[in-house]
Length: 150
Length: 411
Image 1: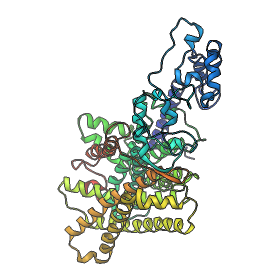
Image 2: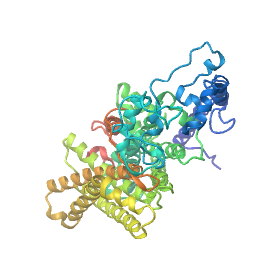
Image 3: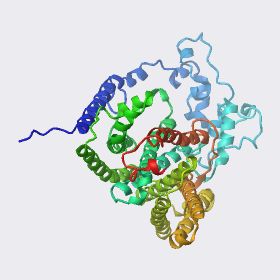
């Protein structure tokens, strides 16, 4: 009986396929990060990398230690749920060392919440900035007591 | 920062009307021109391949002169099919990662498998078996780098005995048979990506994969007509009218089926008048008025139907030159119409809010990652690749094995 031999073109294609698959598998081991898939479809080490970053926010409690008077005032008005650093900027450095001058967020961030947007609830105070009095919001509104005027 | 914020808001606010969720009030949709040309290019690939299969599987001898051209067209476009996606993702420095970590749990990631299967297991193999005999011949007569390229492409197999050529033919036939469902899979998959989104009434539709496949076949044949006529014009050759008329006939039949299924979809939506019907009407009447009614329906469907249909009836009475122009015009219009259809599907699904009570608008960018210039460059790239492929593999100076069956001699 004649021995079965693969035709030359099929043999070459099989070899080429094996070479391509082999190259892909080698490339995969080299290019896919070690920790990929440890917890899910992402690089596991990314979690530790993010966790090891130094926090930049101090938190409302830290502000309260020294600025309790302002905090008490704030608690009586609509902005009581806001975090101090939402408007004043991240200030962990200042909370840890009072000699560090707190960073200042330039301008006011009022429009982030108060620019008119039809998808916001109707009871929420909104303005169309183009039609509203144009200069600083703080000229007419006190951020800590928003319903009062200066 | 405040001025930046104000200007962003001032720009964003007029881009929507009615009730829109906050995360939808963005400057432009998440998917724009790049995602429009992605299904367009994959559709052209699938269509050009189906057109080539008419020769191999269904033995339509009249189309033999365009067999190789359609296969190379499919190949050139397939090489560029993932480009819009990669451009859309950005980060060219890590573009390989999408290929390195394939998985089956995300419908989007399944494209990697579909694409690899179609490119490596179907198209490249069929091209290789078809050209193998010629590559051996060309490698012997061509000097220089080109000869080295042909020799490398033979993979060292120089056997062109009758028995081996018969095996090549058999393999081609098998690959064509495997290729038809694969081409359906390739483009049906793209339709499935949209059709499976239940939350979006414009997309979530079981007819979507079928409409995508049918429009792909129509656009693929139209592209082959376009390429064939342009190539014969560049080479100052006479057009094989029997081949062109047959292409026009298949184009007409495919267009009839496509138009009927798309009309059925519209009728069904209108009759069922489900939850999102009111907002879909706004889409048809306002947001997509020009691209849908003018682009997709009139330019892409009705005028070509009329032109190609009249040719089916009056073929003998129409002079050759007029027939050529009518077929070329229909092909070009269908190509525009199918692009408009992709636009309507991709952009239409993002022009209304998920609340179904508000609509967004979109101003197309010129340059930049999502600008139309990038998409236009990506759209031109397959034609550049095809030019190189035609110069290499359909050159008039090269002898071919089957002058009667293959394109190079006729083109």
